[in-house]
Image 1 (cartoon, helix red, strand yellow):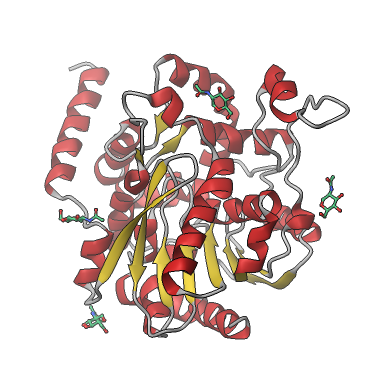
Image 2: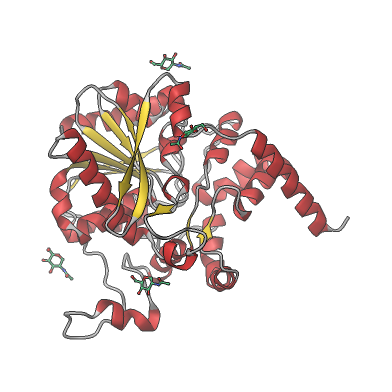
Length: 389
Ligand SMILES: *[C@@H]1O[C@H](CO)[C@@H](O)[C@H](O)[C@H]1NC(C)=O
Ligand SMILES: *[C@@H]1O[C@H](CO)[C@@H](O)[C@H](O)[C@H]1NC(C)=O
Ligand SMILES: *[C@@H]1O[C@H](CO)[C@@H](O)[C@H](O)[C@H]1NC(C)=O
Ligand SMILES: *[C@@H]1O[C@H](CO)[C@@H](O)[C@H](O)[C@H]1NC(C)=O
């Protein structure tokens, strides 16, 4: 059998086994751990329909949780009773877990189909998640609860979009009591060697190819990358090489906190999809060393020059001075995505940093998936939520 057939056969085997072993969705996960959850459809100004989950608290302030790149609200309940969502709900907080446009739960639009109108539907990046998705979800929650303010927690890309919000729609700063930024991502300068860095380096070659193939949606559930990751991590290489080699090279090593049984479960819940344009935008941020709006190349002048005396050749940087909400920056010592050096650049530009802390040995995923969140992260979060109640 030639290698290509072998690969296809393995993909089919993996595909059929993942079909049988369908992971539980958010609602089923919360039910499994004895909690009732509900969900709402929230429609953005530009027509995207987002799923917003709710775990009822006992009257304390609402807290909105936002997941990272290619992830979903499920990430905040995967650790069951010791996960962020459950623990804070047990403390009485009213927990809301959002889903950014394009992931499996928010792959809907009032008029566009993600499949038939792919070019238009997937025409977004983290910019639109910050300028449209967050305002829609925040207004929905405040309206529903009758509160004036809420607290927010973001992980990775879930932090990026709040800097976009605070700088692009500054009126939202006053609606946020405190923004707990876990593994903050704004600047992506000098990424260390590994999977992430390789993807960024290969992207300029890969992107036109994906575009030519018409693949506007990337890293989706049961897509090519998902098959390959299941194939490598469940089949060919198994936990040791996959976790310690491939995954650790992208997000940092911490096999102590991501044990084999859980790692397998987490992988099943990861890769919920995003747009090619969103990946492009992150690669631009890294390569150009600027936390700026999307670079349209020669079309920047058209895009960004209205009301400007001098035409803009480059996209404007996000004005972080306008992010006046209180921000708590929490980093991981072994994180290979959110680097201490880059968070320091961010911190110098943010006017209202109220807390900064590096957690020893934490990698990029530990903030949502570590087996000792109760000891390492939750106490810090509880204290911040009380301080900014
Ligand atoms: C979760 O899965 C169950 C069973 O398939 C389904 O009834 C429910 O609507 C799903 N929930 C969401 C939010 O997709
Ligand atoms: C999780 O917490 C719920 C509610 O407190 C409880 O009913 C359930 O037994 C717990 N499950 C586990 C596995 O500890
Ligand atoms: C994508 O959005 C940009 C900016 O809003 C717009 O200029 C462009 O025409 C859109 N492209 C498609 C294919 O919809
Ligand atoms: C950024 O925003 C601040 C506060 O609104 C303003 O004073 C400053 O001029 C802005 N900087 C740029 C480069 O637009």
